[in-house]
Image 1 (cartoon, rainbow, N blue to C red):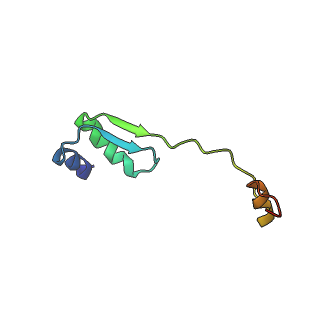
Image 2 (cartoon, helix red, strand yellow):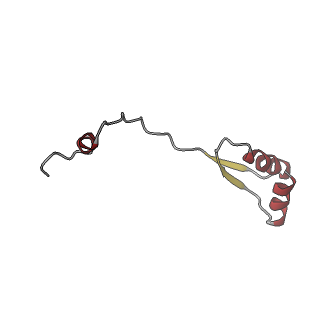
Image 3 (spheres, one colour):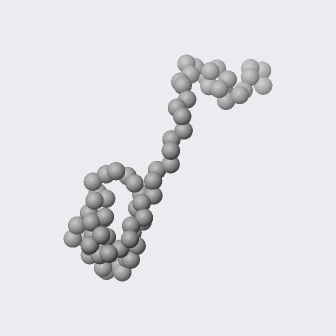
Length: 71
C-alpha cells in the first residue's frame, strides 16, 4: 500500500485506470487511490462467447469452419 501511495504522489497520478482482474494485487492500488482522492476507472473483461462444443477430429474442425471435402 505504501509503494502504491508513493507511486501516485511521485508521478502526480490523479486518476487510476485498472482492469477488473479480481486479484489481490489490485487491492493496494485501489486503497491508495481512495486515500489520495483519485477517481478509479475499472475496465471489465468482455463477456465470453458461448462455448462451442468440441469436435472429435480434423474433419470435424474443417466442417465446423465451413470447409467441405474436395475444396
